[in-house]
Image 1: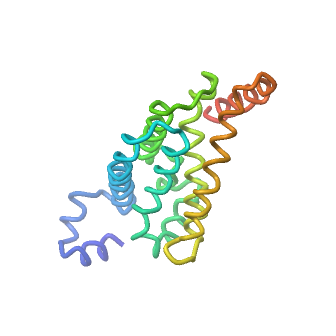
Image 2: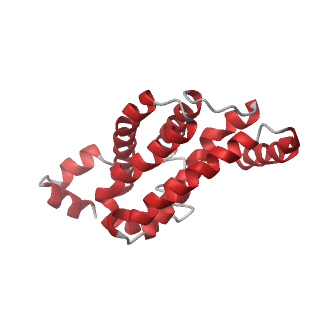
Length: 190
């Protein structure tokens, strides 16, 4: 409850409501804070390399690092965020700012990288990478290994596969499949 949050923070409930209209607004502020911390954590790695795989791995690993202190109660967040009508869902209108910030980070991964992909793939890739991160987040929530070692291994193993798939998208024989995938992604937005 907001009362419990205010008590824990050592402020009056009125003060808590002055800054956050509801628990959902408080959690949205937490999402925004995580995005800022994630971007700051990954900045040196993005400045250091243009290799697409290196940049993608750095962003996904940095998210696990930044989120690690919150793993103990991630399941509680996920339980609420998984509800499609919840304002805390990563797909909700209320989460649009945090979602767009995260997609923007993946746009930086792509734009600053050496990856060569068809224009349609490059245009959709930031959002597809964000969806990949959502899958990593789901796995991370359920990962009970020390320091979420299995999630870290997942990132190390999935990044080369994504890198290869993106590079394969340039092959002439892949044009039909690439067109189908990009059309699918576009159609799901509306």
